Length: 418
Image (tube, rainbow, N blue to C red; front, side, top):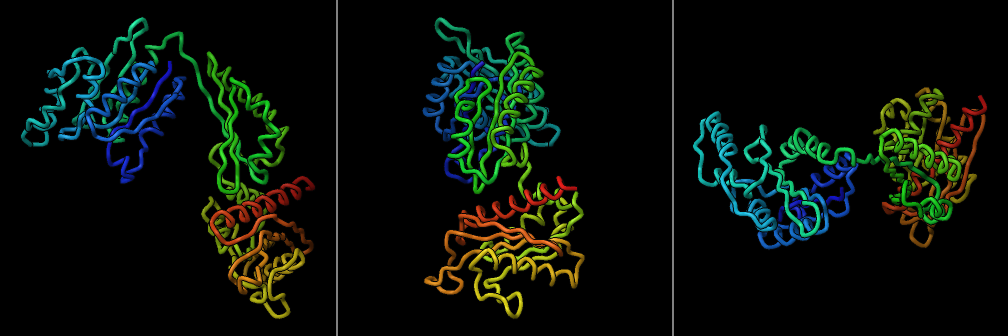
């Protein structure tokens, strides 16, 4: 079954609210094994909604609509649904009785605009709404020479839409698909330290497959690899995911830091906790972002008790370099910070992230396109160079992820030696 989602509402087009309904519905359709090919947002305009629904019914087996079923003048989805399916609007007595009962419980009078919510396209199957006043409905629209298409309209209020979808629409769709149902499973592998083009070159043959499919999604400082499998059973789909995931781990190695929604900082905090380390942190061009990310992760307040944002390494104490200009300076910063932090807290590890200042831009104005990272313990220090620098959001995220990844890999190497 191929589907599309239509969300109505001028307020979405104006950017006044975020369309969370479509994202939620997309995940539910995926769990049902239904292909989602299109998502459309259209304003509260009868002609435009009608045109979108007619197009959807022509090209998709299922058109799932949210919004526009309320009592106001601009709630025109039911009118558009009737026009798109070539039906008349008729009062559904059961829906009207439910609306009147709700208003009676509230002790309020039912007005004509409230009664409009009981108007459904002729022959539609109503979807009772026990958590609101607007019923949904299902219309089977005929298509010349093909099976009927399904037009399912749900309220736009998220709580109501979710309830009707879970309690009524999903069981209906499962029954409708019967033995033809397929299962769609998806998995996300999160990577850091490799650019999108590098990953693409390593897994291009996997990305050319049709089932399972493999795709990339680039974010600030990291790349997600998504695997999606379709099969006649959930078990077979999961097995297909496992096989491709194993291949990806073999090709991408420890660039994969987690699966699902786990952020990099959460992985680092967990590794720190497992190793029994508490961290002292010194940052220049990341401006405190690393400390904020680590402390926001579960357990981060305990693993990162000491942090300092500086503009110059000279702030760490007498004898320090005026500006971070080399790997040696990053190592000096890490060891100095570790020594200082251990005076007041039980800190066993330090991480220093130092950008390279651009003298032409003033002492603290900007950073060149490189940074240095160092990890220090009371007995050893390790460091690396990052080919990225700067103070804007993108640079801070790239530098921060590079530093966290270096710390993650260092912790993993220490764990392997134990």
